[in-house]
Image (cartoon, rainbow, N blue to C red; front, side, top):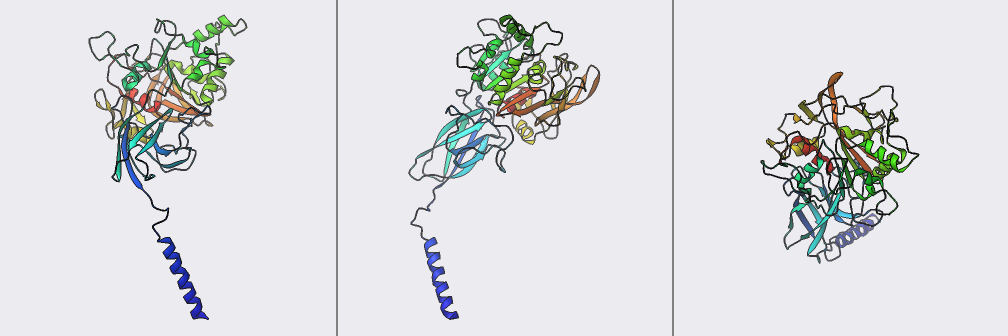
Length: 435
C-alpha cells in the first residue's frame, strides 16, 4: 500500500511539472527596458521625483486628462520617491535628481510603440516612445509641457515670480545686460496669465480682483480656471477690500482698523485650494495664507491668538532687511537636486555647505513654524533677525488642504539686482512649483 501511494504521488508531481513548464501558452512575456530623462520646459533643468508610468490616463472629475490632485502624503505604500499612480497601470518609476529614469515593463508584442504618462505636482503630460526591436527603448529627453497647465501670476511692485517662471521655460527673459529690462520677462512671451495690483503692470492686464469674479459665467470665480496661482509680495489685499466694498454696499469697510478679507473671498480661496488648486505666496502676500488658512502656519504675532484664528493683517512684517542667510535645507531630495543644477555663479549647492539666500526686503514676514495639528512641511530654515529679536526661523513651508496645496516663502524669489540666470532662492521656487 505504501509503495502504490509513492508511485501515484510521483506521477502527479511529474504531470504538474510538465504543465508548468509548457512554454507554448499565454505566459510568454515581452519585457522591455525603457530609459529617458525628464526636464523642465527650459530643456536644461532636470526634474526630480516625477512619476513615469504605463497605464490608463489620469483625469479630473470633468474627464479632462490631467494630474489627479493630491497632497504630498503618499496615498498607498511605496518605497519610491514619487507618488504611485492612482489609476490602473502595468509599471511605473520615478525620475532621479538628474531627471533620468529607467524601468522594465511587460509590453504587448504586437505593439511598436508605447505611451508614457508623466506627472509631477500639477503637471501631467504624455510621450509616445518607439519600442524598436531591441530589449531597451530610448525615450530621449522629455520636456514638461506648458500647454496643459493653466497658471496665473499676480504682479506687484516688489517680487517678480513671473521672471522666474520665464527663466525656467514659461516665457523668455531679456539677456542683454545693457537692456533696461535685463533679467525680466519679455512681455507677450509668457505662457501664463498676468494680473496686476494697481500700478504694478498697467496696460491691458486685468486687475487681480477679476480672479474673484465669475467672468466666464461658469458658476464659480475665475480663480478656479487655474491650476496654480502665484501671489507676489506686495499684491494688494486692500484693493480687493475696496473693490468689494465698492460693488457691495453692505460689505465690510476697507477703512476698518482691523481689516480682514471678506468671508466670500476667504471661502473662494479655500475652495480653490481644496478642489486641487495650488497657491504660491511670497513675503507680504502671506495675508492670503494667514487670513484663509490660519491653523496651518504660525506667523509672528500675539502668542494668545488661537491657532484657528487669523492674526491682524501685517502683524508678522518685522524682518530685518538685506540679510544673507546660510540656510539649512531640510529635504534630502531637494538638497540632492540643488547639487545637480546650476545657479548664476556655479553649482547651486556644494556638498556639506549651506545654501545662501538673499532677497530679504524691509519688514519681511517672519514665520515661527507650524501649528501643532498642522500637516505643514518646513523645507528651509536659517538664522535671521527681526525688529525685536533674532534666531533660527523657517523660511519656506508648504501644506496640503483637501486636494490642493499652499506654498509660502519669507524671502523674495528675485533679488534687487536682476539677472537672466537663476539664483538659489529662484531654484527653490522652481523645485516647489513641480512638487
